[in-house]
Image 1 (tube, rainbow, N blue to C red):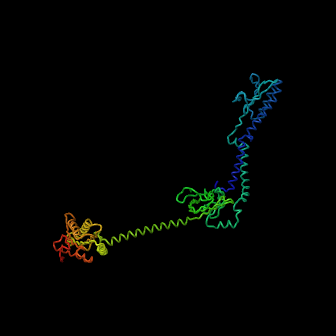
Image 2: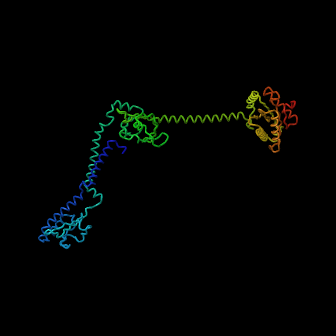
Image 3: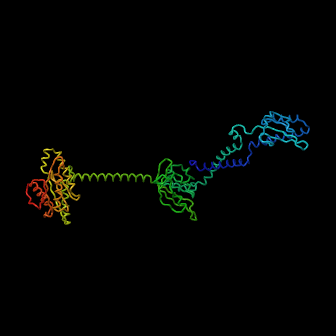
Length: 499
């Protein structure tokens, strides 16, 4: 029905109304039916028989009564039998198989199939003429229904009324069509607008729509005329639910301009369109809203582009994160010794000055420990480089276990390691070195038993640069090696000597 134009809908409704009036009159009994006319004919036949039988009874002429009943039976197919019943309920005359057919459902009263006509003689009731008619209900229900003239009248009148009303409404609505009262230049201006525009009445029904809105909705312009603007398939932007409020109804109800409101239109072509809707009330001379002008700005493509841009930015951000992660990994690889996992010499050379400056600035102690694996070349020669690599890894693990997170451990070169301990005195650094030495020298530390020699130096000894501090620790290391290895030597407790 929504696909029909307003002319056809109105015409169809008026035709149904006219047919309903006729059927209502029939229900009230104001329209005669075939059954009514049949009953009236039967009553007239019975009255005629009574008029003929009256004089015959006065003459006691039963033969005349029989002749009248036989004639009525022959001329009227609906008469199945007839009889004259006299005083004492005696059957005096019978035409047809009356005794078998006469079984009235109601005693002492006539029905449509069993009719009784009283006969009088000398002013007193003398007897009764009985006439048995066939039932009025013949054939199927539909056939009996079609036999009713009223039904045929309703059908014919409905068709004719629909055609007539359609013709009349088309001519009438020409004068009511808003496009006929809107100047052509105004309609042309609305049609060239890229935004959809409709004019609604105070009931929210579309009075006028431009070409852009027709394309947005995907319906014929004639089907929009008179349609409820709220029934065109609107939904909330972020859900498929119907909107809680419609801007044009709010504009009419509150007589105010409703600013841009985002809505989604589910078109009949299956496409979802995102629209920004603005409604302005149309006021009469008393400031009351009689309708509204509604504009629809299609932002579907803009939202698609925005979504694509957001996805692209997300991908870019993800790529940047991945690049940053890779850079961090490369930085770790560049600053870490690949075999032992501690800082390499290049990274150590970059960070040592920062340790020295911080110590000088804050007036704190700074100690340095140099360590060397004893007879490491012998390990490689006797057990192979794979065993030597295992020893280097186990030694690095021992350094990490006995130092703080603020300390810096580095593989200084080959089998030589360096430890920087901020805030530690020469004594504290020597104690750390001793714990490491004992852990490595303990049985079962590694598959190949090894020992380490250590040299310890601190700013307490007067080193003016970090290079001087390392040299002092290195000199102490060579003292340890010269004294038999597997020991810790503090620079401030010995005279450095070469090995």
